[in-house]
Image (tube, rainbow, N blue to C red; front, side, top):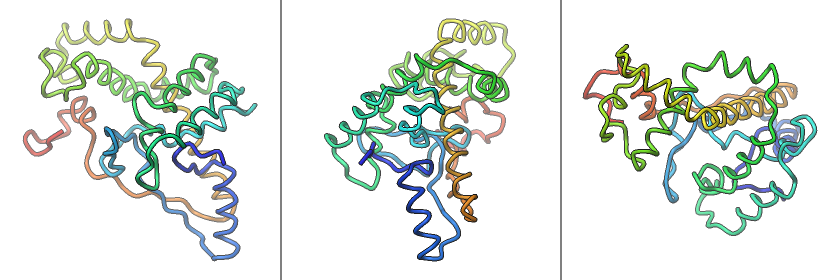
Length: 242
């Protein structure tokens, strides 16, 4: 089976299961875990403490990227490498998040290869433009965090970086422009992943709705640190620890 470590609403197997659930069990609603981007490390992943804005790699069905509807931007052997990696890693729960969303996971490697072959079309360009405000902030946060050895924004050495989107300081605006210029490809890669996650989620939802079933997801608890960092005025100081 094409098991990468997690199920997808848009997969053929899920589609067959939904048919069974409706026709033989009378189920008319599908509930899923929060769909936001999940952060974690070495087996510690909490789907309820992820992002309120961005979707995670777990929403991307890599197998779809091998098909013509997505211009076959992922080779079948690259997809199989992700499946094989799932067989060779520890699966301590229902989902092998280490293989799906880990920073150096085979899924992340496969997505970078697919991105290198991806040719932006009008649909992607429109998506990136309409979501630029939060996509760029999240991508910039990860870039600065990496430069700071993975530390939380509260522990960054540069005060301008700590308050990058909290003022109209010319130095902050200059810093933002500098980061965007030097890391344009990395920001586009993040946008690519968000776009694909959104497209694949839409496909899954459409399949479910066409069966006369409804889809809803659980709610997140709180916000991710980068969202607090980028939107400080929306949070009461000292109440949220991120």
